[in-house]
Image (cartoon, rainbow, N blue to C red; front, top):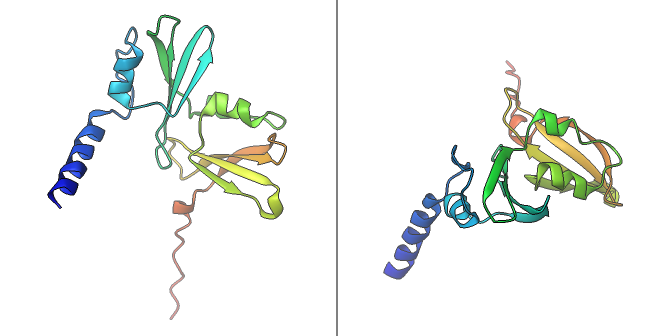
Length: 162
């Protein structure tokens, strides 16, 4: 029992060491410094002669951070990609890979009836109770994209009946 408690405590301490967001002064840091700060990336991609590390903070997180490293492995910039400007770039006819390139991993994936495809949902920071959703057909191409209401917002109160 003590061993289990010790392992749980160690896991909690180690997880507390990683940060949710990149630090303000990240430029010039190494990949190892970023991983020590933010934890391991969910995805790593080769882009523009360097590397991009992707840190989705879901399924209930409202941010996905992309951290860009140059060829020498130093951070050149970072950005939070779940925003209106990026959502406006998602259009019917795009591939699901192109969506992942712009927005990263979805917070939730749900299958559509009769195997018509899936819906990817992204929670994001906004003043409304909404998320961005992308409908992807079986051929892995975007059929539609837009805003919806996440399940936690469907808490409608029953009318009071006398």
